[in-house]
Length: 164
Image 1 (cartoon, one colour):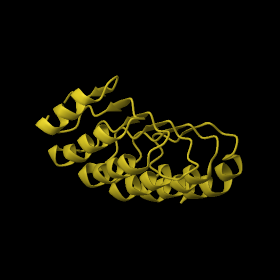
Image 2: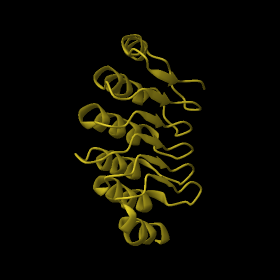
Image 3: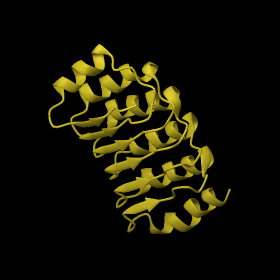
Image 4: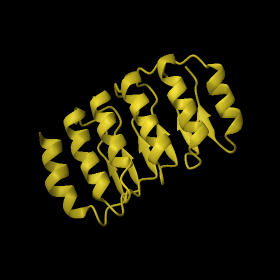
């Protein structure tokens, strides 16, 4: 509740001048992520969002993905480390970024309970998205599939970290 109030009242007033939001370790959960997604979709100056360890799950990742898909979204970096978006949230995030990403160049989804089930969506995103240059997938349970390897080999100047 506090996160939603902070985002909807406090940060919304600053959404045209603030460039970085770091709400790490505040347990904003999906409710706070949805409020932040609304801010992201209306901001003209927000370039970096850090949401480390906030108990964000698939629903929150879906909301953030749709906020990033806004035609006016200027966000260049999204850090979702140590959350619980899992395959469902990762697939939705990758799907939206495949279709509508204009500005995001760096995404960190390390330690998010992602498995092999989300690697084909990741491969599609990397194959069709020429904006993203850095993806951090460390500490997930990914199997490096043939499609991911092929996608990585086709993506020039892409930094992807997939250590387990």
